[in-house]
Amino acid sequence: MKNKAKMLGTVLGSLLALSAPAMASEGYGNCKLFGKAGTEHAQTAVPGQFTVIINLPAVGEFNGDTPETITGGREFCMAVNIASRLGIDKVVLKNASFDSIVAGQNKDFDIALALISVTEKRKKVVDFSTPYDHGAFGLAARAKSTVDEKSVKTAKLGTQAGTTMVQWAQDTLPDTKLSVFDDTGAMFTALASGNVDVVMTDLSVVLGQVSNSGGKLKVVGQYPSGNDTAGIYPKGSAEKPVIDKIIADMAADGTLKALEAEYLSEARGGLKPEDVPVWKY
View 1 (cartoon, rainbow, N blue to C red):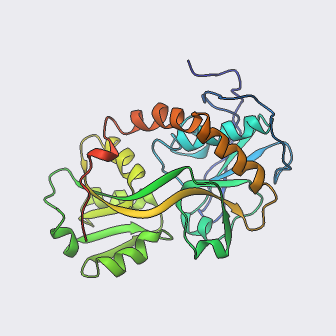
View 2: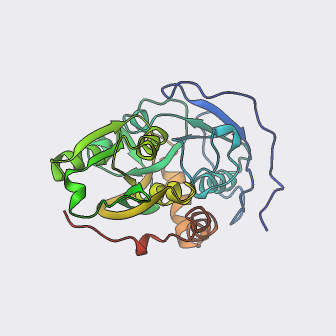
């Protein structure tokens, strides 16, 4: 059973421009807690709360259309469990553009969780957490599409600004007609409306969006990314050693696997990463 004992009220608010993070609900939502609370201690960016930067939509990771409505998801409940082990019972989410997250433009937060790939270039402006997953580039198309491993190389391809996939597509699939979108929602809307033939983003996001599409979309393939997935801290964060230890502890004690099983399997509607064809380029 999910632990609802820590459910707190929500604060009113509305989504601001993506460059200006929007305040989310406060609390633990419906997340199940693992491990003992208050075993670690750190001075958070905003005293008395654990502040997390996110990028919506992120089906399976942060389940909700706006920060105010999120009560579950793998990365959300990961943040909740970090907060619990820090002895903090107030988790606050702020939505921001992916571009701003990896550029280190956000302030007054403890960690950003948005399926972020670790790269040397990004390390110059942000600090990364202990990795908690290994990413892959997933590709989605409309349900009746005939896009395949060969034809994708000349297709109208969409991807998201700020991701490693922009440069990767330019270098690896130079004959595609590439469109770059500000956010995941706009990208999948363009796919559904036929403005692009196929979209590429983190495989976990693709699986969630396809499952949530009501049969209008399908997963067609994946490319190995070669990159770990980790959280982002502000450059020079004093919290990094403590939160890194908590994430490593959660990996060792099975918490991360339990959260993945709890939220990603359901959000993906039975779709499994290992069942998606691995394409060559």
